[in-house]
Length: 86
Image (cartoon, rainbow, N blue to C red; front, top):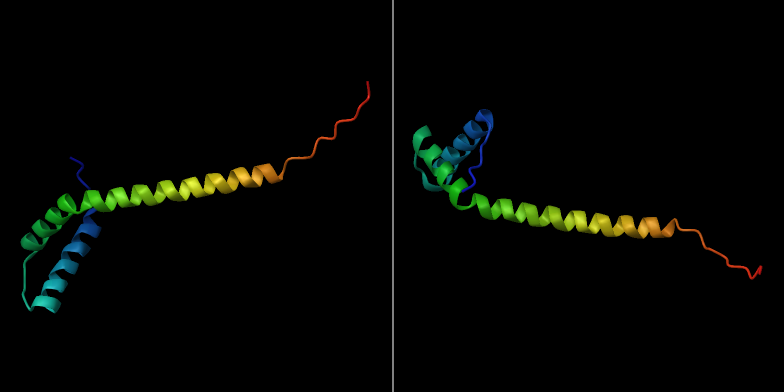
């Protein structure tokens, strides 16, 4: 199982975001531990889906760029004129 590691500062901000969500949407105050456990749960359960979507999007972007590069390179080709010299 892939574990997503988040830098400390970013994790702290995400915990605060979760706490803010609970307060704004549910009128509930949750502590750092509860918000951190919720973050861990969502990273474990939803993280792989988001990660795979990112990989899929990156793959498509690279395929499109490769196709454009092939077209650009083909456009640089010079015509070859064959003459009957012999």
